[in-house]
Image (cartoon, rainbow, N blue to C red; front, side, top):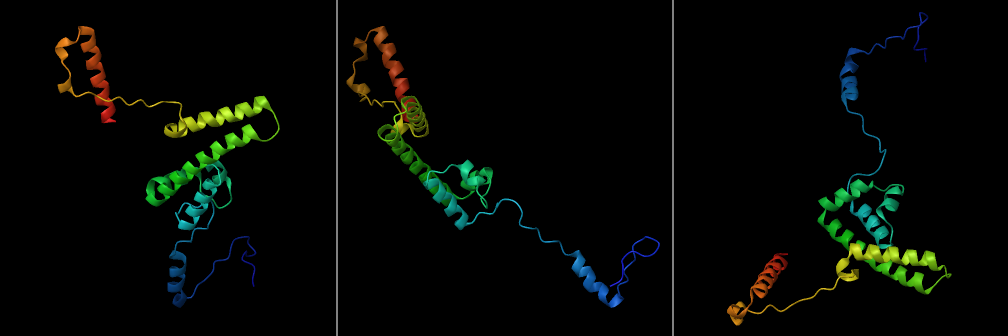
Length: 180
């Protein structure tokens, strides 16, 4: 093989025979394939199953996205919006995480070394988080349901002005609750 630099210090020109020019043009006009560098961004069932499995094991998105071969958090969130089956599995996995967290509260309270201050903080943090993430199950709110009397059963003429104002306020609140 000859040296590509000539004695004058400049690069030698490669001469390509005319009959080979068409094949060279085809070869060099093709776009270069992209190398597989970076995180995956294309949704696959296998990758989705892996993510859901890790969520079911109690792992969070930060942990999952930090693992080799896992997509970024923003990609996972985008997949949740774009793929209905993944969205459903994701929601179920998050519900399972809440159950695990409630079991953690019992384990911290019942088992382990007696580090009262630290354990109280761990339990209170989990209870607060559970009450915010699923207030219907773990929240401190009490739902009171009142039976609404039929308007035809009431004789509004016997109400005082204050009672009428209260009745009207309650009717407005009931209408808003029904709308929700």
